[in-house]
Amino acid sequence: MTILAMNKVYLNNILQKARNGISLSYQEIVYLLSLQDPGAIQQVMMTARQLRERHFGNKVFAYGFIYFSTYCRNHCAFCYYRQTNGLSPRYRKSLREVVEIALRLADSGVHLVDLTMGEDPLINDTGNYDLLLEMITRVKEATGLPLMISPGVVPDQILQSFSSCGVDWYALYQETHNPILYKKLRIGQSFSERGEKRAKARRNGILVEDGILLGVGETTGDRANSIMTMMRDGGHQARVMSLVPQPQTPMAGRVTVPRINEYLCIAVMRLAMPDRLIPASLDVDGIKGLEMRLQAGANVVTSIIPPSSSLAGVSQSTLDIEQGLRTVPEVKKIVAGIGLEVACAGDYVAWITAQKEKLAKQEDCYDENRYCGRTAAGFGGGIPGN
Image 1 (cartoon, rainbow, N blue to C red):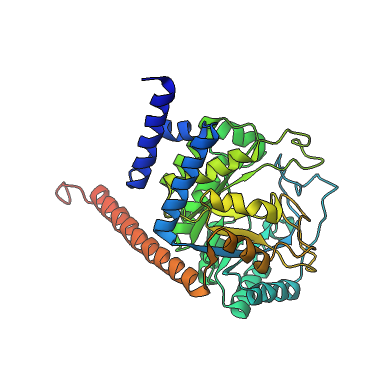
Image 2 (cartoon, rainbow, N blue to C red):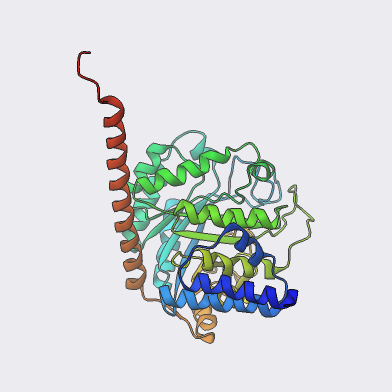
C-alpha cells in the first residue's frame, strides 16, 4: 500500500471515530491540523458539518457585541488596546448608551448580548465593580436576553455577583495553552489564574467560553494541545481566531497565517467537541469571512454590531460596522445561502437552560465529593480520643 493510500485510510478512520462519538487522541488531532491536501481538508469540514447537524440541526445562533470600554491596564502583545498603544481609540460608554445599544441589538434579533471591556483601571484597579454590576442588571432587565460578560480576570466574589445578577456566560480566553508562549502574549499575567477563574465561574453556575489565537508563534502541537485542553476543561463554547497584526504592538508587521488554518481548526474543534458552541467571528474578516467559518462547522455568529453606535471591534476596530454589514439581516443572508437558518430565541434559551441544569448536577457532585473527601480526612478509622 502506498503512503498516499495509507494516509487516506488513516484519515477515514479518524473521521469515522469522530462520527461514532469516540474521543480523538492528541496525535490524531495533530494529524488533522497538519493536513494540506484540499480534498482531505474538505472531508474534515464535511464531517464537522455532519456532527454540527447531529447536535444542532441547521440552526445558528447570533450574538450582539458591545465593547463598552477600550481602556485596559494590560500589555498583551497582540492587542490594539494594550495600555501603551497611543493609536487605539479610547472610550467608556455610559450606562444609558450601553442600554440603548443593547435594546437595538435585541430588536434586531440577536440571541445574546456580549458586554466586553478591557481590564479598565477605573474598575479593575480600584475594585469598584458597582457600575459594571448595575450595567449587567439594567441590560438584563431591558432586553430579557441571555448575557455574556467579558471583563478579564475578576475577583472570586465578583464572579459570585455575576451569577446573582443573572450573567449566563463568562468569556475568558487563554489565547494559548502553552505556558511559555503565554508569557510572551499576555505579558505579566498569570497563566494558571485564568483557568482557575473559568473553573470558579462554572462552580457558580455560569457557562464558560475559552479561546485560542492563531499566528502568534504557536506550533501545530500547541494548537492540538489547546483543543485537547478545552475539551477536557468542560467549557461550553470554544473559539479560534486568526491574529490580525495591530499597529504599535510587538506583533505589528507579523505575517498572518493563511485563513485555511483557522477553518481547519474550527472543523477539528467540532470533531473533538461536537456538542459545544463554536463561533464564527465577524471581527477578523467581516461578513465576507462568515460563510467559510460556517462551512467549517461553526454554529454561532459573533461580533454583531449595530451601525451608528460608535462601537469598536477587537481585531478589526471598524471593519463593516458603519456599512451595516455586521448586522442580523446581513448574517441571515449568508446563513440562508448555505442551507442554514438563524434560530429562534426559544431555541437558544432552551440550549442554555439544558447546559445550566447539567452544570448544577456537576456542582452537586463536586460538593458531595468534596464533603466526602473532607469526612474521610477528618474522621478516619481511628477511635475518638485515642
